[in-house]
Amino acid sequence: MKQLTVISGKGGTGKTSITAAFAALADAVLADCDVDASDLHLILKPDIKKTEEFHGMEIASIDKEKCIDCKECHNSCRFDAIDEDINLIKERCEGCGVCEYVCPVNAISMVERDSGFSYISETRFGPMSHARLLTAEEASGKLVTMVRENAKKLAAEGGRDMIIIDGPPGTGCPVISSITGVDLVLIVTEPTLSAIHDLRRILDVAEHFNVPAAVCINKYDINAENTDMIEKYCRDNDIRIVGKIPYDTVFTEAMIHEKSVVEYSDSMPSRVIKRMWENIRGMLYNE
Amino acid sequence: MIVSVASGKGGTGKTTVATNLALSIGKAQLIDCDVEEPNANVFLKAKLDEKEDVAVDIPEIDEEKCDYCGKCAEFCRYNALAVLPSKVLVFPELCHSCGGCKLVCPRDAISWSKESIGKIEHGRVGEMDFYHGLLNVGEMKTISLLKALKKKVDNSMNVILDAPPGTSCPAIETVSGSDYCILVTEPTPFGLHDLKLAVDVIKTMGIPFGVIINRDGVGDENVERYCRENGIDVIMKIPHSREIAYLYSKGIPFTDEMPEWREKFRILFHQIKEKVGK
Image (cartoon, each protein chain N blue to C red):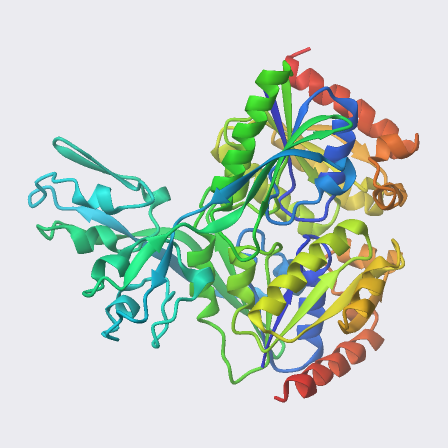
């Protein structure tokens, strides 16, 4: 089974629009691993078949009746999650259990925490695994892993040979969870100095985890000089550029019509994306 | 006064707003809190003079004292320790530095060693004091670096915090303690969807906020309608303009070339000040 993750480092370069277009072109299972601010469902309109609760790390629960205000928990918590008045600051608690351990009167217990939901869905392009992290929750890496496991099961059940993963922005925990062990990452960049800065960092992350990378330059015509810079950088580092997409408002129009760009029109971006998809298939299957 | 600039969706223009705002208000502190992908200095080009390494505590086992009882591994909820019959394995990348292992060790065999997770850099641009954090490649401890970075906040100054995207921990950690939060969005379905998530969070946190619509005119009217129907202030609209996009691509703050916008940002900042009563 082949796994492709679409990432970017910098947000807003077009990851999700391009993933949605791939979904329309491929016979694949789709996984939205941007569990924090996921948008792929706005285009794919998944019909949810199964919902499962997701519990991240446990969370402290303080019984004020038993509390003798000794402040041991407050003093021992390294996350500043218990204030001076012994109130829990929920979003800071990392579930370590130190407060429960140090409390001399057993006023604190660690309890299950509702952190989000994972979903198995059907879309017009095939099965989809996705999730929603409740706001202000952490452990998104763990939820990403759950989404990927579900996607693998869907692929095995449906006899599909490919998983396309829409990744989160950044370089941290959820990104690492989204790219480890995949066959290829496609990095969507744009010719702006910010995106180029982020491209270099995310390429380092991919290399650090031994994941092969390819690059797509979106809106390549907004700054020719910067596009040259990206091409040179990729050439020097032996990274293949699999597509250069011109700037076109058709992406936004397609989004407004809740369609992927390849369904919405046969404009230049659609034709480039189709060719790019063939390039990526070639890389994945060594054709 | 602390003003944070956040958004649910990435790439809506947080850094554009944060840098241009900070450049328009005279003496101020700007802290780029997107430690995974910091971009503010692409625009500011501050000469970064001070560097400070940020490290976290990782348990170190004194094998002389340890009798391999396994209590530390049993306590650790992050699976950062594994106790074998005659060896303790530590997995620093899983450790949250909670201190639990050291607390439970009956033989006082655990001490702390430092592990670098990234760095904080400082520079000056005119009257502005600038800081950003840079997480090491492959590192997952975003929050630990962010907490160290936020210690740089000087409450006696006007402080602008440029937040990372999203609505989970790193964004919350940045925004918490702010007097006001600016949510930057774009008028598209993705922008609206993620704006709603961000509004939910900011409301829960009880922080006054307003919305800036960037690339105004590129999509549809639904963001404005949503704000109107929910009594949310749209405090500025930045037009969808080829010139602004081009300046952005070159790493030039657009208020450098369009000075009338300096004045708009300055007025906006004073309106925010009045709103929060500072």
